[in-house]
Structure formats: C-alpha cells, structure tokens
Length: 101
Image (cartoon, rainbow, N blue to C red; front, side, top):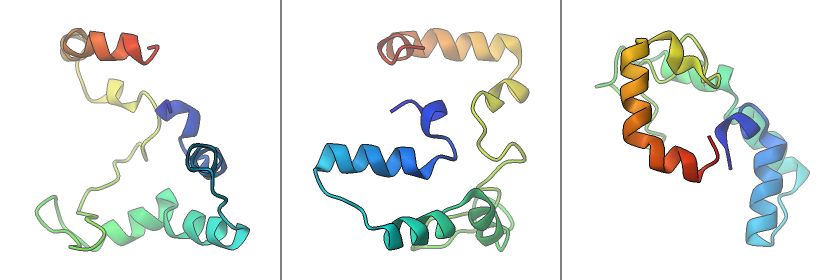
C-alpha cells in the first residue's frame, strides 16, 4: 500500500486488511478505530508529552508525534533541503523504484 493512497482514508486501509486477511471488520469497529486513531485525536493525545523522550508505554505516542503537516504526503519536502532530499532519494532509489515512486 502506498502511503498517499491511504493517507487519512481509513476505509481504504480497512478494505485492504479485509482483502488480505480474508476477514471483515464490523462497522462498529471501523467507527471506533476511525475516532480513536484520527490525526486530530492522536495529536491531542501526543500533546500531553513535551518531546520525543516522553511517551506513552502502551501506544508509544510521544511528544511531537504529529508534525504541523499532520502527516500529509510529500510534506518532507518542507523540512529537507533539496540536496538532502536528493541524497535520501538516491539512497532509497532501489526501494522507491520497487514501490513505483
């Protein structure tokens, strides 16, 4: 699954899981998980912690878990320089190619 295909689309994720595992996810469970794991709810939970060193031992949510870009695809281009982005891309080229990027 490509991240930009399922970003903020829980139904896409649930449908893929159902197809892969051959099991269905009830509407009640879908609704519960959508609510619990929405970006805004995760952001709210993570805001209880100051930085990366502070985290919840069960969920592993930590301070600054969600950036100001809220996980939007291609947001890394906003904080890496062009040179850094090119270097990362060259190191990951084999994998990115395999994944169709």
